Image (cartoon, rainbow, N blue to C red):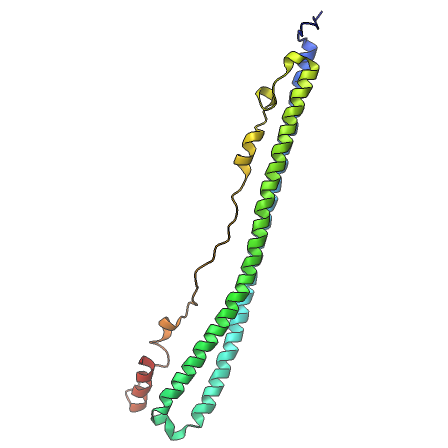
Length: 233
């Protein structure tokens, strides 16, 4: 017969203690599994949001392209009307002034529509960044809650072992009552997503790339030479 006053541990108590450890370990693993699934859900949300962002940016690009094409067509029609009224002025310096005016208008249109495109793209990217920021914080909240749940399991197991027999007691977070709650945050937490201002992006077809190709005439007559000279200034 066990000497209870001396705290002698019986086989029955050892069996009860082992079962308490098994149950606590099962619950600890359940907490970790739940955390992994939560983090995976946030990762999935980030991927879905990224895909939506890419689609929206593509839609913005198409709209900008359509709007810019319409503006270019309007400028072309205006240029045709202007040049059609010039008659003999086409052979003088007036053509240079007209080309300079049209070039400035084209550059102004480029600036307007590129800025509009940039503003729209910024709105989409900012919305994506905000969602990503929230998910990063939510991830760390989930890790914090899971770490606290593991600490509770460690404390509960220590208490249960002590209630079975004081000599079975181990401190929370040590021995069999250690479910690595203290390591969980450093293991699973994520770094903050800090927004960064991107550099200025130029369209692929920049002024620098097209200047020497724009309106270049291949003839060697007076008019062709004059137009090419104006384009090169």
